Length: 219
Image 1 (cartoon, rainbow, N blue to C red):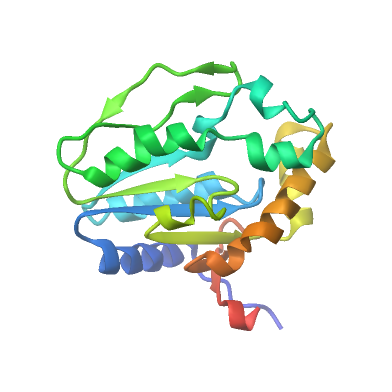
Image 2 (spheres, rainbow, N blue to C red):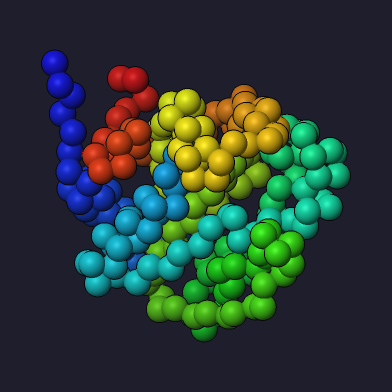
């Protein structure tokens, strides 16, 4: 029997409505979590567009723009799974220039990107401001880890079988030389954070055009 597949727009509009029902005034932060290859960036962009269509102000950021330097990321070794999980991102800067000032609201300025990991160099700071009622959507791996979990007003876990996510990454970037580093880092995250259980909403995103909300007690 064919599984019901909702239209992408319908699912995104429903999620946007739920978020705005609970966080339509003041500042709120939404996290989009999942494996590499889970479709986080595209899903976050599409959700931002759905919320923007209602007339609400939305800002976008990615944890990918808050990497540490290559030397810091590989301090435990270029093939270290623990290094991938524990050393990839600069959470101190992430909080200081984005999360904390965004939550303050008012005229406080914030930065949505700080480091270009491809160039292995800091980005010029572009300070932004927004209205008192605004939502920030942040996508990235590992963002429901214990030390970040309290930052989010709402979080989404994109549920994608690992083999599909890895194939997407291979199609996009070519064969991965240090596959065990990334696979092992994801395993550490799953064991330490249980991000699927931490999320407010779980979205089956194996079909980009038909994301489907599922529930932990029925999966």
